[in-house]
Length: 257
Image 1 (cartoon, one colour):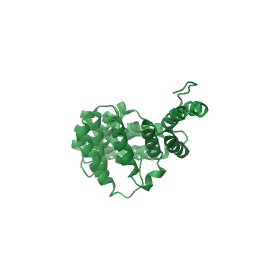
Image 2 (cartoon, one colour; image 1 turned 135 degrees about the vertical axis):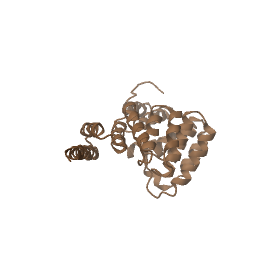
Image 3 (tube, rainbow, N blue to C red; image 1 turned 90 degrees about the vertical axis):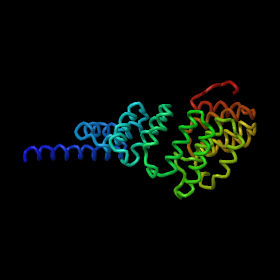
Image 4 (tube, rainbow, N blue to C red; image 1 turned 120 degrees about the horizontal axis):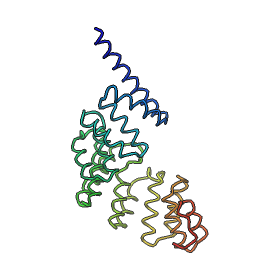
């Protein structure tokens, strides 16, 4: 009986650490979450505890530390919601694209949502330079995403596909896919940034300025948008605003771009 009670005490303490860690994470206390979740995986290393620890590391963009924690979660229980998917995303962030594909093969297709898993596969294939295969999955993810009525999020197949097309030099198609995306994207800073960047690439500087101004109005600290807006102003002959947005981008320079 004493042995059973000892194990019960350990389990309860581990559960308490897990709950404390999740609660701290929800409050934005990342260091508190790490401390509690480190104790949780030490005392009772479940897939759920390892996943939570990995997610906290990933939220700090410490993907080299997130990856082994998420790998352990996926290996312990591939059915743990999103564990293998999160592992694949950490591998992608580390530019380990082939490993990311292998991790996605372990992820149940219904977790977290079909389009997210499909999009992750498209991005990994794009990273490997397998553009034709990637396009197939990007378009599949876009079709599946349309069934999800929620507003556009930071992870979005239309925006990701547009980035892929831009890298491939298919600028006209970038504008086509973005302009067909729907009214909901008008409130998304990256949508305006990507449209503006593509317009500038096509030497349509004045139109680009309008879109990029909308991007920074929606997100004033958007450094990439300020950077491209700086280039657009320089190209249109407005060196004063070009220099100002170069400063706001953190790429300050008094020279024409």
